[in-house]
Length: 195
Length: 87
Image (tube, rainbow over all chains, first blue to last red):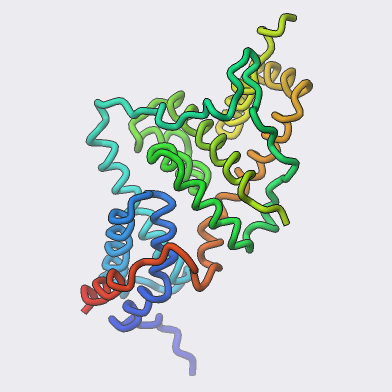
């Protein structure tokens, strides 16, 4: 006879999640919000919500996927609250300057040519070093740029949603994304040692 | 055509980025393509940006596979504090 009832998660199981997934959730939180205290608090809230809701977890998704979906919601709530309170004050998109990447002459050409390397999705997923460099480069962006960038490029949210959360116009968002991509591309191309 | 009428790399890279969000207008497409005929650097730039656009969405899956994580760990004290709250 097989038991089809869902696994019951005990308080002990929930504690194990902290050891199993705590570091990875924290890394993810840091990639979205580059503030140690905030990232730690969001991970804590995630585990406590998961702990309270553990009866509802049916095991359809992996434990990690389930936990990270809770964390993503916490991050969105945090960002909504953060940018709501400063909606009147213009977000300073000039924090993210790309001036140093271009020559100042008339044609504003690249100072340094991008390499011939083409990022290959099949090859990079498994390469841990690549993701560390990604995190390192992301950490160099100004907060709002990194947040806009991860919402768009990591989470594939649509432009309207992102503008709503950050309280900015589409053209502001496009400037932010362009600059974040330029800086990140330059940083990754410089640091990633091509295999 | 005078040199100053030619789209700069700075404008071209803005258009390349924009093309990842929405379809460029006819005028923008012409501007970008004329620039790309003359500029190998922007061609490489576009190739990399398109590649990255496909890759960064894998970040969450990459984290799931990366075990044990070797840097940027949640401090042990924090983990203990969280476990205490789960009593």
